[in-house]
Image (tube, rainbow, N blue to C red; front, top):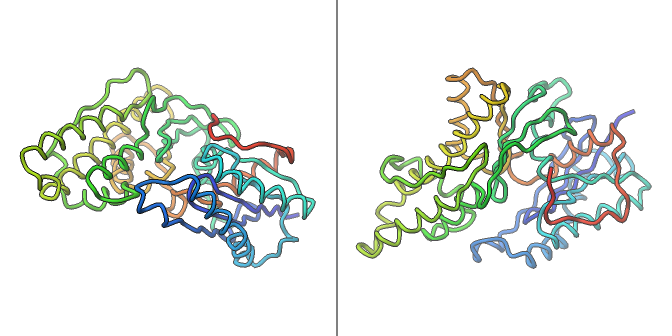
Length: 339
């Protein structure tokens, strides 16, 4: 008998629904929220309101594109946390109502675990491109920068993480002070392609073990802008490509330095990357070059699976369903939760 999972993702500012049958993706619908662009970041109240408007049509479209009906759904999986509480509650409440109406199991999903398991989404039944256990995963997004040792679908250990800002947060905040707009990561990436990565030097942290820190880099960047703008008000406009290239190069160097240490310490050369920042061209190029230099076998997610999406929630729900890991109907959401 086939296992068909409806996944719901509403942790931040994207409302998404996906249908997966026996590990194969049938549909993945995402409604983004442009309302936040003018504020330079996500406004929680506006995000939750938009989720309320989007959740029904997004789920309806996902089921329609799958070619199935709601009666074909075996279980529903939803992002329980971490994320914005108001946004999470919309997905949580919808999933519970759907589960009750269809008399099907409810499966809660950790958003961070889902990013890692996005590598196991199949486009066809024959596809076999997922990492082999155990593997290391560099999870990099606007809210998280972690190195995770993955021994099984349900056995993950964080062996290194940021002690302050995340890599994506550094991209967004530095882009904001440059007046580049939101989200800043993709804009920085685009500008960096035309810049000189060696033009400006920024401080790199010296954090023990495998942990990260990006607050010092952000401060170093701000001080440079302050000093240079005092001398030339047009400094940013004249140097935006070089600033972007130098910032991006520094962030990638910080990320990969700790990842190399993690590979050396664990002896694991199966290495994946996940999260929004995994769409960054410099990150992807660095992974490929490390594979060639150090003999790693690397795994880069499809661009459609790098951002928050319900396909990764559905695939996580699929594996939890196999293990009969269901949750109670009164399960609350969590804004912060560990792997």
